[in-house]
Each structure stands twice: as structure tokens, then as C-alpha cells.
Length: 436
Image (cartoon, rainbow, N blue to C red; front, side):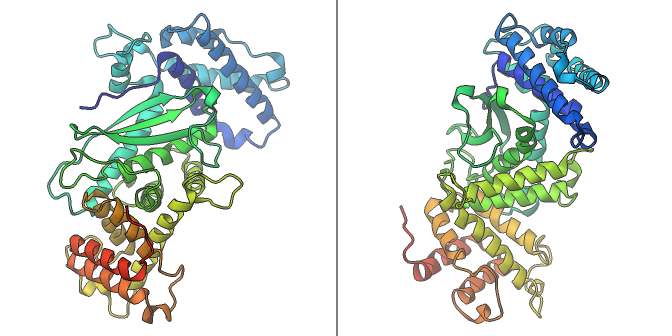
């Protein structure tokens, strides 16, 4: 069993302050965001954060979170921060204090005898309960369960095997570093997924900078969680979850194609559709979450901005290929003679192009035989399809050959033959693809 690690107590106190503020105030954002009070609320926020962080870095170092609650009670905002809007700012402060007082360290321990004190064993307490970072743990739990349901609903290669458990770790990066990724978006949060050779479980690590964890970053966290859980959580688990090999950051299938799939799963759930629709908490900030997800996703493949990500150029074909495959499947399912006539009645993707794409994507991602070389040539092959399929494309290469192997796969369900046929066809149609 992987033992998760978590941000040190002092970093978690800074993070907790921000989570409490955002969860208390954000629900009012629609009423105050366009008002003249907005600037004063921002000043109040910044001053409160500096006040708490100064205490944590000084006399409050390694003190329990419970002792921090008194600091919130004693905080008095400077006049400039609330000038002309005292009642509103006092109301917001009360909301924040109430949110802070909802959490007590004793509720985090099973026997009410041990609480976090800055020692290594704190990670065990946080992993078990973690009330101070509860919003992050809840978001991870939703993303993990959504991934499991989608793979269970549409995947076929795992058989009756149990899916590996995922565990969340959190990691703080020093503010001096300034960034946790090289993507051109102002969201200072990132995720990585790792495996241990002797373990079945999957570890997802969320990296952030507590003192730079702003509202935009908070709203982007669900995307990071969904990407890690959907794209990587069950990667390479067939025939066994042991000795898995994590994908490279430049893997066009795992980091491009599967990132696009993760975004579709998130859109499904936030739109109240699909096998994970009931996991969506209510009320929520769904449109804002999806906006950040879309921005984050596009930043991964944006090659035209001033400072593109180092891997943008190699991931973009993976996203294009996923979109092109979806378009091809849409064409196949809209034949004059329905494709479903040839597909077994029990197949969940029988009349749904997106379900067929999910099945293809999840099965390929789970299968260890679909290694990095095969993933590379598969993306190169599918990316040969035109962006928009016209009637003329249907009688020309490469559309005809690619359509045939996809059609055969949908009818037979033979994933091994589909991978082999794709590899052979790629050698003919995309001979220039380099293989390691």
C-alpha cells in the first residue's frame, strides 16, 4: 500500500486559510464581482492572507491548526481595506471565521489523542481525514470514482479484475520557484502520477504553492484531478497493475489524446450526463471549473502563444487525433445502413460514437502491449485523417483504409487485431514516423 505524503503543517495552515476564504466568499462573487466593493474585498483578502502567513512563519510555526483559529478571531482589517464598505467586509469576515471554526484537529483523529504537530506522522492523519484540505480530498475522491465508473462502464480488457486504488499526495513548492509547470496559464497547480513496482496502487501527487494558491488556481484543481485519474490512474494495468511504466510527459497518446478524453468525462459529469453524473456536488461552480479546464487543456497544446509549453508541439497531434477519431466514428454511426446492425446488441457503444471512443481509449490506455512505440505510430496514423470529413474523403486514402480497420474493430471487438492493423497501416501511410 502506497503511503501518501502531504504538505507540511505550516504550509497546510496557509492553504487552509485560502480554502476557507474562497469557500466562504466565492458564493457571493456574482453579487460583488462587478461592484465597487470588489477592490476592497481583494484588499481584505490580501491583508488577511499576509496576516495569517506572518503568524504561521513566526510564533505560530508548527502550532496546531486549532491555535490558528484564534488568529482569525483577533484579526482586524485596516481601514483602507474596508473604507466605505465596513458592513460588507465584516459580514465576509464572519463567514470566513465561521468556516474556519467548522474544522477542529480533534475531529481529524480516530481517538482524539493525536493531532498534527509538524512531524512526519502528520501525513497519516491527513490521509485518513485531512479536514484542513477537505475540498482537495473531496475533489480527488470525485475524480477517482468518476474515472473508475467510466473505465468499468466502457472498458473491456480488464475483465473481472479489480481496478487499482488511487491515493492522493500533496506537495508544496517553494514560492521562490514561482511556477509548478511551464504551461501558459495563470493556474499554479500541477499533477503527476506514479507507480511502485511492487504495488498495485496508483499515487497521484498534487503540487502547488500555498502562498500563491489563488481563486483561479482553486477553480482549476478539478481539471488536474480528472486528468491524472482518467489519463493515468489506470494506465498500463492489463495484464497486471504491477511493474507499470509511467508515460513520458511528451507521450502524445497519454498526455494528448487521453487529456482530451479526460476533459470529455469532466464535461459529461458537470453536464449531468454519463455514469458519474450523480457524483456532482450541488451547488457548485461548474461553469467556472469547466472554463479553467478548457483553458488548461488548450494551454498544453498551444503552439502559437509567446511562450509555448516545451511539449505543446508533440501533444497537439494527440489531441487532434482524438478529435479526428471522434469525427470518424460519428461518420460511421451515421451511415445509411446503421453500423449498429453489425455490432453485438450487448455492446454499450452500439449506437453512440462517444461511447465507442471511450471504449477504444480506455482499452488502449489499460493495455500494456500498447506500448510507447505503438502509441506513437497510432497517433501519427489517425492524425493523417483530414480535419473535416467530406464526401470526397470517403473514397480516398487514408480515410478508406483507416475507416476499414476502425469498422472491423467496432464489429469484432478485437483490440489486438486493431493495434496490429494500425501498426501495419502506419508503416505504409506514415513511414517517416520515428520509433525508438
